[in-house]
Image 1 (cartoon, protein in one colour):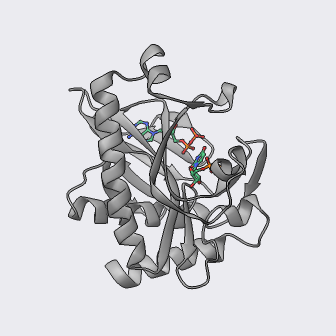
Image 2 (cartoon, protein in one colour):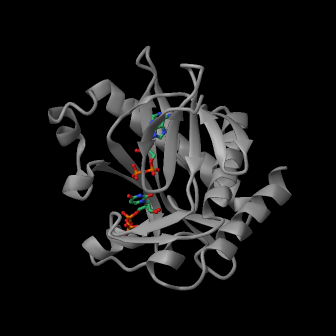
Length: 237
Ligand code: ADP
Ligand code: UDP
């Protein structure tokens, strides 16, 4: 029997499997920007992101950071633990860029004195607004203790990702992660960590090797994402 489609998003499809403890995630050949208003088929992107995020979740696990990731089952599919996703986009910034630089008229490319953590309410109909801890509590997205867990974990993940990307000559400018709750309430890292969700600049040239290539029409994204995967494979496989 065909697996049941649970959700079709902008970059992935989620399917139920015979095992209630496992979901199958299929990475799609689709690129979007402006909250989905701009959308393109990009042949090969799904396969690249599936492999990139699998390698990164494996590296994080080796460094003691667990996530929803179970295993990669094909070039464009992986199995993950089903979670109740907390509707927050947790962004950490190490270098000024993107909406931070724009909102605050802050020069781009400046190394920040400390990592900045931001919460965005994951709600497409509101365009994912920037919110603070009080909003998170009042909206009952998470309680005080959970907010602390999310922030502590996000900062740890940042340090581990900085190390991982440094080893492949990439600067981790900023990134977005999501967390979910297991049935016992434990909070676990979920979703994906890919050039779609991170800003990655080449250490020597500062060239972006991430979704900004698509957002800013700087060229083809497949060769750029392939470069990230090749560097990861060379270093970690
Ligand atoms: P979007 O929903 O923004 O279009 P995607 O296409 O990446 O994004 O869709 C994947 C969806 O799956 C996201 O909404 C994400 O929160 C959700 N998700 C990620 N990991 C899990 C998980 N382990 N369990 C349940 N849902 C998940
Ligand atoms: N990001 C993401 N999904 C979103 C919004 C942002 O993965 O819906 C990532 C983005 O790729 C970047 C970081 O979060 O690495 C910070 O993004 P920013 O707030 O600067 O927004 P942008 O200008 O990229 O939309």
